[in-house]
Amino acid sequence: MWGFGMARTPASLPGGLRLSDYLSVGVIARVFPRAAVRAALRETERESVRQRALPADVMMYYVIALALFRQASTREVLRCLMEGLRWVSPELLVRVSGKSSISRARSRLGPQPFAALRDACVRPLAAPSTAGAWYRGRRLTAIDGSSLSVPDEAVNRRHFGLPGASRGQSGFPKLRLSVLMELGTRAPLAWCGGPWSESEMEQAERLVARLEPGMLLLADRHYGGFPLWSQAQDRGADLLWRVKSNQAFPPVRGSFPDGSWPSVINGSGRDRRRRRGQRAVRVVRYRMPGSDEAFTLITTLLDPEQAPAAELAALYHERWEIETAYDEVKTHMLGPGALLRSKTPALVLQELDGLMLARYAVRCLIH
Image (tube, rainbow, N blue to C red; front, side, top):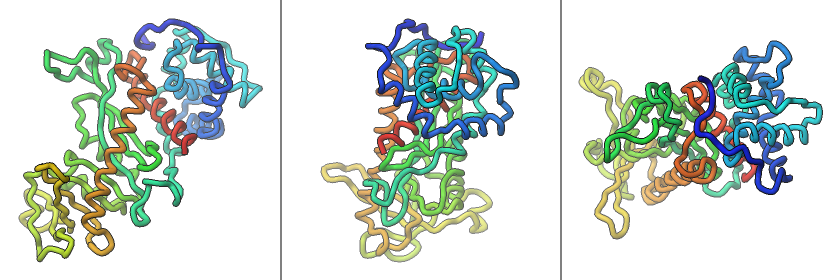
């Protein structure tokens, strides 16, 4: 059956509908204008072909609103949405339908229009004066992975999988999520979700396509392979990644005065033997005060005068801002358990897109 996950009490929002609720919907409509929503529907051939009680453009806003009204039932979310949309578009007349009608309308919509809307509307937010968003004229970004729980339905278990836990298996199927985020604003620029069996590296390969010249991408040691490095560098972005301690980066000549040294990152197999698949990098190695753990970074910023090693060592730790952003999504937007509502894989992925679009709208407002 198409539908939603855990049963929720069909109660109205505390204290009735407030001006802040109108503004929440108003922010969505401002960041994602109806013209852009309709264009996304046309592009993906998901426009309503006849007059419906729940037209496709309203359902696009509904899926995004699910992330903002987590304490409300699915039907109550629709009522709040319609009150808010009438505030910004008085001509809208939509009936507040039951759960089964909402589920069918979401199923007709599918996940494709949300990807089109993201591609049309999601852009970096940081202005030149935005604190923490820049390093020497380069826009700071980070990439990292996490997970979200989905309802324990048979189709979700088959599609997403149950990861192992200390005592058997996890209680809920898990969706693996990866995000490309702008630092400073904490705005998600791109994201992808998939089964637990899908690796963070596979997802990252899809996300680096959103990199642009002038960006500087920070990444943890899970991403330090040659293929992904090459794909990201070919997008014109600069890179500053931590690498695993067992990866060797011998100097190709003497060290620089700041203690860093020039080296190369190699491909494997035939490419390595023929000296192809090789990229120049600069290596920075350091320890934090009071710790024996060594950090090794590699970067495309090859000139130590333009990017001193001490600055890069401090800059790398800005990557932890993406961990804070994940906490904001899981704790403050989704609440305990970080559990999505949708009962089928297609609607889970649709809900994920709605969640991240809502997150982007919130960061637009804060910025």
